[in-house]
Image (cartoon, rainbow, N blue to C red; front, side, top):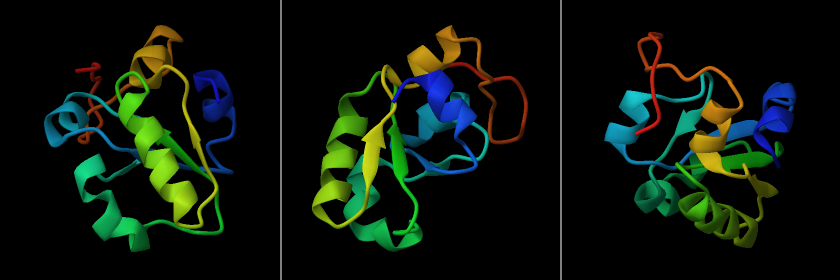
Length: 105
C-alpha cells in the first residue's frame, strides 16, 4: 500500500512502526503504534486483530518480515511501500513522539 493511500485510510487501519527506538524517536507517523520487530512476537496482544495492520519501517524490509509474521498469526497485514522514506518524500508529516517536526533516521 503506498504512503498516500495509507494516509487517507489512517482511520481504517492500524499503523505499526517496527523500527528501533532511536529511529522512532527521530521521526514517526502520528498515531502509529511502535513495536520494534525483535519484540513483535511477544507483543502481538497489543494489536487489534479485527483491524488491518499496515507495517512500516525505514524502507520496507523489516515491515515485510513483520507483515509475514502477522499474517501467519491470523492478522490481516500489509506493508507500506517504501516505508518512512516514501512517506517523507510524499510530503507527509513526520514528527517526534513529543509532537515536534521530525526526520527519517
